[in-house]
Length: 325
Image 1 (cartoon, rainbow, N blue to C red):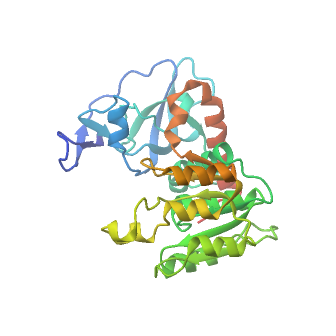
Image 2 (cartoon, helix red, strand yellow):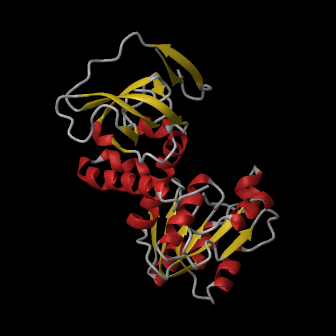
């Protein structure tokens, strides 16, 4: 049986992807579930994070979001039985590659897959659903009446975040990086029976002429946005950026400007630097900055119950067409 791994022998060297032959799987331990993999999503491997956590190996498994059928369970497994359909995310320290025929997974990383949800949709949604829940529920506490700005709403994460925020009764504003993205967002429709439009306004920033902060303040009557989910930010001026996409991203000052009093800024920018004037402005607004790292759920066993509840809710909303693409 073959499984896919990535290999990086030295710093700066280009990553190579290799198939490794595995003659036999390890013996199923007490809490392990043996799964016949039906679908696997390819997600980015954060080699730097693995290195910082002392988890980096010569061969890193590829594909962590999997969906499949249970073949066998360990003696202490209580949540699953053979022939169950399951979905989950392999932990950071997993030796298993999701791109294989059969994988061994601890039961605490899996939830049941609803029968009506296709394999590919289950594996493809589970990670971005987890990220959206983390950002909106646990970092910014979305609630009815809030205004949420989702940057790059046409991305997989952005699409789910928009639908989750709207489902919770929030007013959603989104940015688009191209005309195609804007048209896609405008075609999104809320679930049947929902009166509120899915997106209150789509801001097309592809030509670089639209001021995101000004547009958001106009949309909110000058009050600002309660929650911002960014897709990266510019830390420097446009002249200092070498590629096109960073120039389309909002500057950190723009996001601080458009935040409301008591607002929440959730960022994926791990190297965010705030100057004293930035911090002072956030202080005056009583606003907060949170960093979105969905891996934290698996770095503390204390959060395991909440983590599994999120995965189950993501699958439920996918089954009920609250999440759709």
